[in-house]
Image (cartoon, rainbow, N blue to C red; front, side, top):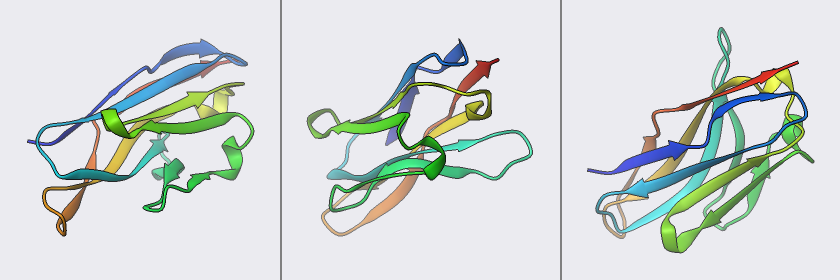
Length: 120
């Protein structure tokens, strides 16, 4: 059973930092396109940052210059370093990845979500 296990959420004051981690666990061939999404109450889920299949990192305009995404392929783990946090960054953050059970078959998985709360 494949799982995406997230950690690192919490409550901080504006201007603070948090680091989120997401590790893929279980039996699989490879993990691809790891990304972070977030969803605030009454809002749709939105992409925050992610890696393409070629390894290129994309960041939402709202977090450029403040957030950094990185990954450790050996650990099948993706990280989101969040600096200069703002109250509008408050949301549940979800890890997303395409996990391949074989060379040609992959499907999308979501983590359970981790809450980030930024107070002013």
